[in-house]
Length: 208
Image (cartoon, rainbow, N blue to C red):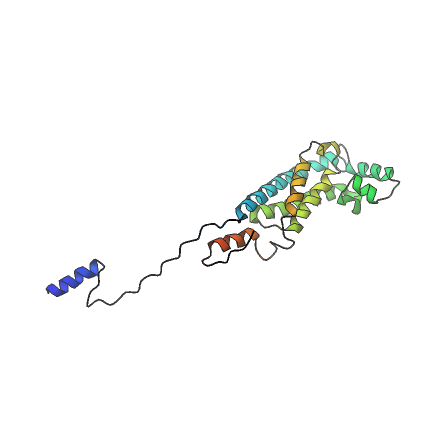
């Protein structure tokens, strides 16, 4: 009876007992390695989503105000502005015309300028919202945001001449060259791959 009491006591205390079977120990999870130097996924994520948020607000404002400002019945219709620019360059759309007023609207049908302005704003809203929510971007998406907003700035006349549009376009132009051509479309996000490589046990290190 005393022996059994001693074995029971040892089992309660977690010590070895002669009549107790060996219990398998739970595997200990390996400690997560610290963030390696040269990884900028968090900085990239913050800058990317901040840029997307600015574009989202800009395109939202454009969607609500463009028709009243530069639409078909707006205060300064952009259709008349483009016609004047085209007349100045002798009715031709060439490199001089495009360099004076670079906009995609030159290559579209001007019969319904309100629809064009709404389409530009909605496409910009969709792309910027996608980048803002997912943090997923590549060179094509950033170039689309840059070109669409540039197209609106260059027909906005005095309404877009306050200087708030140029800095965001310049920042996007610089950001654009930090993106891969197809990165983020269907294959995941660059910052997620960086994070997985820094947290996965035994992950190989690679440069930024």
